[in-house]
Amino acid sequence: MNTLVVVDASRNLRGVSCPMNLVYTKVELSKLRSGQVLEVILDNGAPINNVPGSVLKEGHTIISQEQLADSAWTVMIRKK
Image: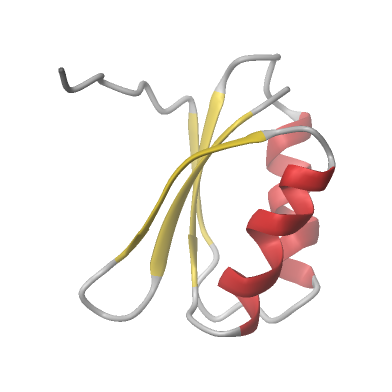
């Protein structure tokens, strides 16, 4: 069974370097209510290596993490 995830907010962070991509992710999460979903698009390398782990440590849930055709990543985060 394929479950549809409703995205409540989205932020394209391609080209944004660390740690600002994490800062922008946290700002977007702060605008959401518990249980809402944020989609962020991150570059390969340090951004995808650091941002998902950092939000997990804060108690949020990574719903999905998928690489796009251009080597960027889309990450779906459910706010705690």
